[in-house]
Every structure is written in structure tokens, then in C-alpha cells.
Length: 287
Image (tube, rainbow, N blue to C red; front, side):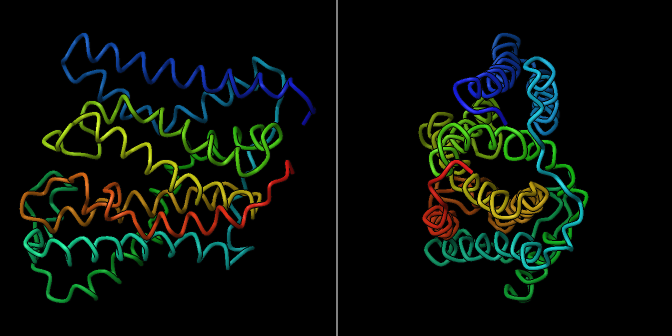
């Protein structure tokens, strides 16, 4: 990459394009109130970053790199770390939530909530159920590949320019914050959280920003350490798969400000501590 202030150009153009689409569709939904533009944004959100990075490359003439390789088996340690660590931390967060709020736990896994049906099954052994969920989330390749759309744009492409300009630590924080800001139009309309939460949708939006900073640190860390955003996509897929399961074991099946999904302040505590530890390990340099 070229050095100097010219690195601002890809950053600004990429962010401008992403925010224009996200907030533009959000504004259209606010005006129309039909749910149509919200659904469009929900579908497009995963693919938008990679498309915007391609457009940014074209507009600026600065190719950068996507830092992507599908040969994740070449680094088995990173692969296992990406596939298992987030799931374990999310399960621990859900356990903490249900220990503090035992009346929220139903003992029934209403997995139909994820499939648009009424299907459910009794949880005979919470530990066995948790282990099965961790393993399934870790090998859910289609979801992991789907998350590449976000990870190529945010971690594979944008993060490199940000590190060059700001250094690793500041870049990682900014990347997480800016990624979180892109989510806010979705959260405003009820994505990931119940609109029955106190102070919704604004409290939901504030929490989602925190979630994106926490998870963004993990995704950025593994991308920096391996030079490959595919590991971040694996992590992202695990978070999205297993992160939707705890609420399926509650009575009201609504995700609150504290949990049980990892987007809650209490349920994300283990993810947050882990991310802080990873952040401390990051070098301050611009390499």
C-alpha cells in the first residue's frame, strides 16, 4: 500500500458507500413503514461490504488486498480457535444469565423459532446440549461462507488501510465502532433485540454498538494474526449460529438487554473479557 494521507481515501469512500445504503434504506423504511426496505437491508447487509469494497477499489484505483485464503486447514490451531472459542464463551455467558435468572430458563429448546415453525424438544442434559451446539456451530460451513461478505469488506479490505493509517489498536477499535454504526438502522427496527426492552430501540442500538466492538476485536485479531479473514468469517458464523440459540430456551423467547443471547450486556461478559485480553496482545505498530 502507498503510505501517507492518501490512505484516507479508501476508508472514507468505503464507509460513505456502506452508510449511504444502510441509512438510506433505513430512512426509506421509516418513511414507508411497510417492512419492505427493512427486509431488503436485512438481506443485503451480509453482501454489502464486499460489494462496496470492490466499488471502492475501482473508484480509488488502490487495490489493497482482501487477505483471503480458503485453505484454513494449513493453520489448524487458528481454525480450531476460530471454530470453538466463540461458541464456548457464548455458552458460558448463557449459563451465567440463566444462573442469575433461573426463572427465565424453560428447559425446552424451541428450535422452531429459527425455522419458522413450532418445533421444540425437551432439554434432557444442558451440558450435552451445549456441547452439541458448540460443535455444530463450529462446522456450519454454509453460514461461515455467508459471513465472508461482511468479513472481506470490514476485516479483509478496510482493516488493512486503517492499520496503515492509525496503527493496529486504534484501527481495530475504529473498525468495530464503524461496523457497529452500520448495524444501527437494522437494530432500530427490531433486529437482534426485542422492541419491548426498556428504552428500545435506543438502548438496543447502544448495546449492539458494544457487541460489534467486542466481536470486532476478535475478528480483527484473528485476521491480523493469520493474514486471512476466512478465520474471522468462521468466528462470525459461529457467533451468529450459536448466538441465536439461548433465547430459544426461554419462556417468552425475547432477547433482552441483559441476555440470554450474547448481544445482552450480561451474556456477553465472557466475550468482552476475552476480547480485552486479545486487544492487549495487539501490537501498536502499522504493519
